[in-house]
Length: 409
Image (cartoon, rainbow, N blue to C red; front, side, top):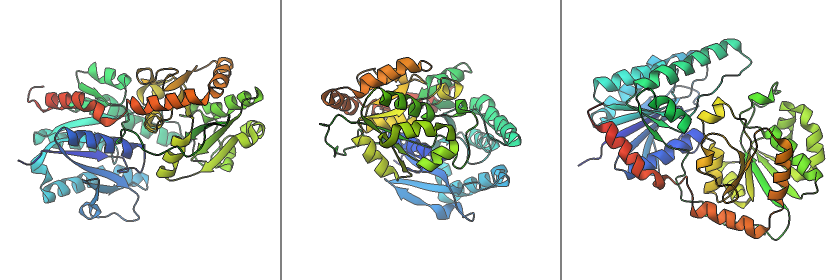
C-alpha cells in the first residue's frame, strides 16, 4: 500500500538554503519516519517564471519543486497565479489523490494564498496545518510597506492560521496563543537532521585563547542602523561586552561569519571604538558557505547570541542555538523563547542577563577563563544530549498527526 503524502510548501529554500529550508528539511525527515511520503514546494530566485513541473529536483530521497521568489511588490500580490500553478501541479502529478495533509510555512505570496489553500483543502477533505515560526515586528524605512506587511502578518497569524486543522508551533508562546483558539498544536523547535555533526575538532585546546563564534545577518548590508533595539540579534551588544572583557585581561578570539568589518562599520559606525579596542581579538570572515560555517562552529569553544526580550524573540526560536548544540558547541545566550527548556546553565551553555551588562562582563570573564577540560565536557554533553535531534520528537509528532487525521474536530 502506498504511503499517504504530505505536501510541505511555503517561503523556504529547500533543503539548506536558509534557516527555513533547514527547518522543513528536518521536519520532513521526521514525517517520513512516522510513515508519510513528503514532497516540498519552496521558493527560489529565478530570472523568469518557470513551469512548476520543470523545477522538479531530488535531495535525500525527497522530491521538491520551487516557485519563483517574488522579485517585486506586484509579484507578491499575484497569489492567485501562484495558487493556480500549485493546483496544476497537484492535478498533473496525481499528488492530489494521495494527499493526507498540506503544511504551509509562511506563504510563497501574500497570506491570501493560504486562505485559498485552506478552502481548497477543506473541499477535498485534505488536512491543512500551519507551521508557525515567528510573529515579527515590521521595521523598515518604508512606512507604506510597513503598513502592508503588518496587515498581511496580522491577517495570517490572527485569522488564517486559526482556520487550519492544526498548528506546528516553534515555541510555547505561539502554541499557547493558538491553543486558546481551540487549535491542536505541536511544539517543534528548529530540529537537526543529524544526531550530531561528526566533524573532528582540528585545533588544540591546550592554549588559553578561547574561540567564540557568531554566524548570521543581524542587519541589512549598506544601511546604517538607526535603532539598535530593533535588531533581532544584538551583535552590537556582544561586541561591546567582549571589548570590556578584553579590558579585564581575558584572552579570546571572536569570529563573525556573515559580514565583513566594512559591512559592520557601515551599519554601526559608532562601534569603531570597540573594534579598535578588540584589535586582533575579533575577526570578520564575511560570507562563508554553510559547510564551512558548520566546521568552524564545531571548532569553537562557544557560540554567542544576545537578543532582547520582546514579542519577536519570545514567539520565535533561535536556529543558531539548535545548530550550535548539534555541532557540539555550547551556547552563551540570553533567556528568550523556550531556551530554558533546552539549555542548562553550565552544562551545555550559559545564560546572560538581558539588561545587566556589568554582571554579564563578570560572567563572560569566568566563562572564558574556564579550564579547557571543562569545555570539552560541555561539548560532549551537547553531543550526547542533543535535544534538537529530530528523532527525539517522533512520538509526540505521531500523536499529533493521529489526532489531526481523525474526522472529528
